[in-house]
Image 1 (cartoon, helix red, strand yellow):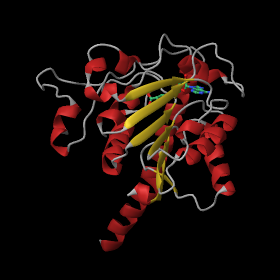
Image 2 (spheres, helix red, strand yellow):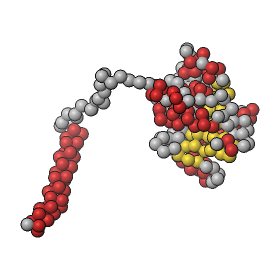
Image 3 (spheres, protein in one colour):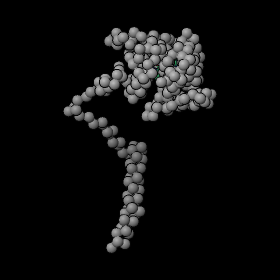
Image 4 (cartoon, protein in one colour):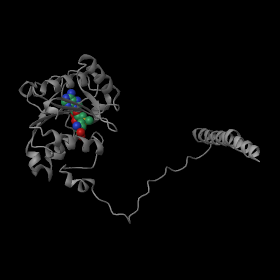
Length: 264
Ligand SMILES: C[S@@+](CC[C@H](N)C(=O)[O-])C[C@H]1O[C@@H](n2cnc3c(N)ncnc32)[C@H](O)[C@@H]1O
């Protein structure tokens, strides 16, 4: 009896189940091939299911007690995602920067949030459309350069009246030729999110290091693992400066360097 049941289990696990899996895989492959050849209609994409019986809540409302402030939760193409915004806001609150610099304003969503989560004077540099650049701005970056206005999220009503918005200074220019010297050695927090080609990321990273206060501070880069050049440039930066404490924040495309006492 025991031998028969052993034989049956052996058949189920080593015969029946693999054969079934093989048959399903063959059926799926055949279905995909027929769809690709136009012999079969693709099934409609599954719609995400939500119920109107469950009311919605703004995630920012849930986080009020943490002291972290969120503005402009809605993400536009080009912005950091919601999780990244939460990390940036919390990190900024923890670091208590007095002076903060962002390279790459875009619509100013992150700028406004960093300002709101600190008492810092915030400087943000953006490339105006049509402005000459030292390095070529590559295809994918152009759509973020060519926009009606930089910083619209903090310059338009009602956000422009927020105390945080009053601490933001918009600067314009090409990060590879801009004169950063008035800001050198003054910054506690730098966010690098300008052009994403290798030359620009290397340039902007070196600029960020020069911007930091001598006691140190925090630099955050966006788009690690999203834009291939960002990863290559950060790895090249690490070859150039092996002591740099670069850390990829798990589950995000953020890389952080907390340098010296400023990175408390
Ligand atoms: C991806 S967007 C930045 C997104 C923004 N930091 C956010 O979190 O919402 C990139 C921005 O960098 C700017 N940019 C591109 N090349 C630049 C350059 N050479 N110098 C300064 N800014 C540049 C673009 O105009 C664009 O606004």
